[in-house]
Image (cartoon, rainbow, N blue to C red; front, side, top):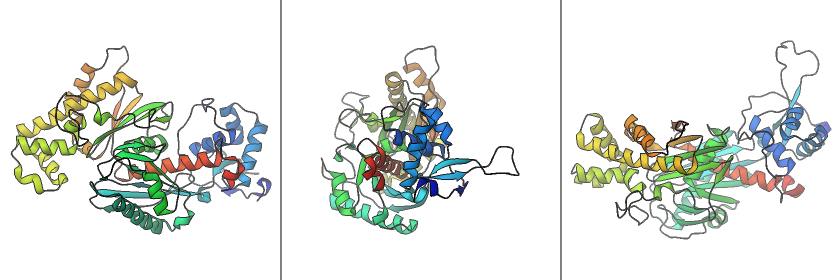
Length: 428
């Protein structure tokens, strides 16, 4: 359908997703990609505003948006006039992403619960699914089976055929080279140096993009949460492990080999406690849930807890601390002090606008109590400006899957509209 023949839809509830880049800060991406992503980030946007934001001529914007409408990626949306309840004459027209033009899935595989979502091209949630299953140190075929079964479930919930998905984003804990699609080490996999993206793509019959799960939390905040309007922020996740995702200049930072920002495996004690990665003295070995459970077994003589689920042990430890048990309180206090060291290192290295603490362990407020934050203040470099805000976000388990969906959406957008996309990519 030609652009001049596209029907104008009435305004819907359209919430933008994706980074809210500052005007004229788009970089070297093709204009069509800049225009599309700016429309998606705003929800709806008028042509004149696009031209103003990007510093290009209205004629250039008209040409690009006409092409995007011809290929079915955006559509005109009638918006109401401010203060004009009668709505006389032709209503103003803005542009919005056509939600049903593409769909992607996001999957998070962990050692205890797997989650998945399907979102449309506008970033709106279509359906979600979750499965509780232990998958620690399992084989690659086990992981492939788990991912396949979860995709079947979430596609059924969404009413979307697997073949209609444009891509799948996949998150796993561990050391992940996202560009190569290789997982060098993960607690959910027995093997090392696994070409996971290729293996899952072959099993699912779809393009697959894989990344570290902490990076996906940062992507979720960048696309859907508090980080949309921030140029630089860090997300620290505390669950069975400790991870960090870092956004620099509105972009996820991964490092030269894709293995950067492994905060949990920075060393805070030489020859210290054993970490699950095999080394000693890692921050994770003092803060993660298995570290707290190990401390409880030793300090409280909870040898009976060895066979209990980790969550039960930690809840019991937390209840004892809240009830005033000195040993239990000291375990959380010690973990909080090590967390303060890790966060101080983040502040001293990156000076972020915001630090977000996320993950299931954030329910244990001892980890970010006032004395922990006071210790953090004493460890950072003295400066005239205050500490960056530290916020606790409890999205729930679907947070990780949303980040995986953002990874897939970003890859699909780049493939359609990026420098190598061309009109073939748009029409795909």
